[in-house]
Image 1 (cartoon, rainbow, N blue to C red):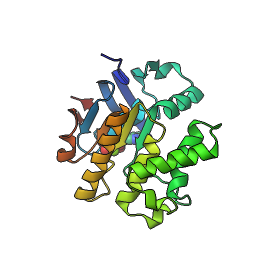
Image 2: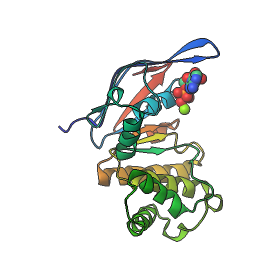
Image 3: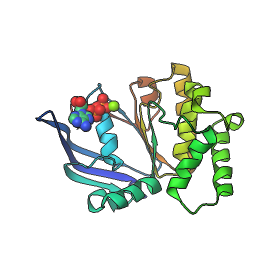
Image 4: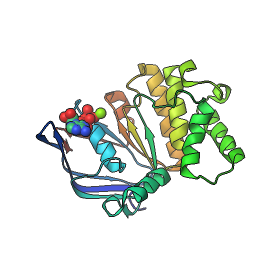
Length: 226
Ligand SMILES: Nc1ncnc2c1ncn2[C@@H]1O[C@H](COP(=O)(O)OP(=O)(O)O)[C@@H](O)[C@H]1O
Ligand SMILES: [Mg+2]
């Protein structure tokens, strides 16, 4: 079997809010193997987003170890963390997080420019166009996010996340702002793209019918994962 894409062991996250210490993640263990799709479900406030942030190196765990594609995140400084993120990770947000002043093509291009500053514009444009075509948006390249529907915006988000061929896609309630049918189409698209590229997915969702499509389901409850 190939090595895990991400492996979290004994992860704890303590934060403080207005002087009150909070124990957000409690002894979390999680391993995702290459190409595996894992869904995390659980009530609001249980720590799902915090888990995603810690796994993606966007937030540092207070204790425990996280190994992302063979690299221990605790051993990396902020610059090295940023490099690890852009080389290995794609992230999909509930609120799409597109740059409002940029076209669909520019939004997708931006993620490649960040990942590889030396890439020629022609290559960037061709790849961004191909990524948007794959999500069915070939005729929306020059649209601004405000001129796109929610489902279309999330498909731009998906193209942006996948265009760098990440090892791991972290998706935080990506269908939370979409109706059921649009949401399930975005998820099908996401699973399909991940399968072709061998990308692993950690999918946080409130929707049991979407969670059921994953290889494995985990439950988060008051900071504990089971
Ligand atoms: N930056 C922060 N500072 C203090 N508390 C936080 C912070 N981020 C999240 N929390 C708290 O951590 C808990 C888990 O939040 P979160 O991971 O967003 O849960 P979920 O995504 O499952 O709704 C919540 O009680 C939330 O209020
Ligand atoms: Mg959340």
